[in-house]
Image 1 (spheres, rainbow, N blue to C red):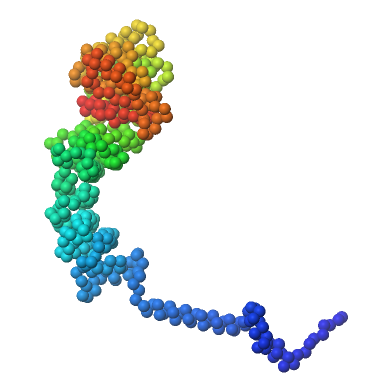
Image 2 (image 1 turned 120 degrees about the horizontal axis):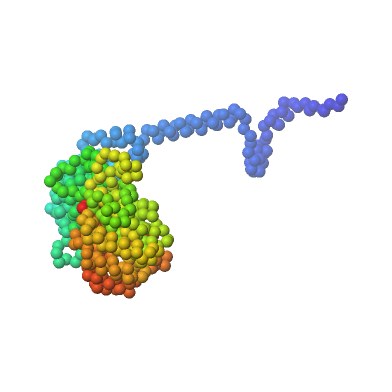
Length: 563
């Protein structure tokens, strides 16, 4: 075995090896290499660093902390305690600590918002005293009136009605000339939130009254006033519907109906208004459901309400610019057509159902789109059967709307079902199409004689929809129907001409252009109507594809429901 030689080192040699000379240290430092510390030296250095951190942390804790976090609730509770000697306009806010004559409108607005968000009654009182006692109407270049309206809204949010009334009165007296309709509408909503309907209506009549006669409705000031009056009335209607007070809500809808023509004349569009029709319809639907079940009792028994509260909303909707929104009309159709059932198909007068409700009749030549239109307005896919083959409908089809639950069992199986039909129940009658129907001539003559007798003698009929193709206008069969209507239709029945398939006249129909009718076709239609003594009848443009004309159709269907 070979052994490696062991080098024995003396003490001088060891010292020189373990502790390098200063020249070696300088050479190591100059070369950039770090010395490796021993374990004891590293521990000592860590202890020194820890002691320094602890000392600096102690110094920081002794300083007053003025930078509280927003949601540090313990710090907020201590800071909100009034300190001795606190001034009358000192606030609890760190951002705006006090209000004085040099404060800006933005400072006051920040203080109001903070007081409302945190329900700080002290700060709200301080802002009230500052605005009512410290400054006058010239504060912030006349912006004091807007700040008072914002203060009133915050006070109502905190149920401080006394403070809100003071702010509203001072604003009305000293800032009437500078009041903005948007601010008045916000105060109306605040009053409704606390259930103060009387003051809300008084403020509506005072600050959001109708424009004076003789003033142009299309001026910016009148447009803004009409817009916020309409939005305030919609807030009144929806809130009372949801609270189960139908009389107040119907009154608001009637006021909207009176306001609608002025809104149209001013040139405001549906996009400018953004009326919450869907919410109002949902509130009316909920209130009507409670009314049918007996849970909602009208507060004014002497007031005559519609058979369905949703019809009050519909009457107001038809006076305003139409949005033709799918969500709105889906809610409307579901509220007005809750149940549908096919009752019978009659081929003569003896087969007609009992005349115990109003009837809306659809007539027109074959393949004009009667069944598709009926399905569109009722929001059903197959209430009336549609077919590409002309003459599919070969009898007078009666569909009961909102009949008593289980009525189909009585019709199909002869069961006896207890209960009564709803107040807004009516019949939709789909008459067979003439013209292109592939049936014998004798059958067509029987249809014609049956139709003449039905139109003359059916006492419950309230509206007759005559469907005409918008692409071609009236043909010979349409002229014959108009002549029959002009000679034998009673005056109690409303006659309405409906132009169908309007989307076929537009290349690529869109939401902005859902359908149209050619000028020549419209002139031909008006001339034919005058020749047959029905020239004053209304004309509705519709399309089952783009859902055009739903609102106008329901305006006349309401006549059958209210019969």
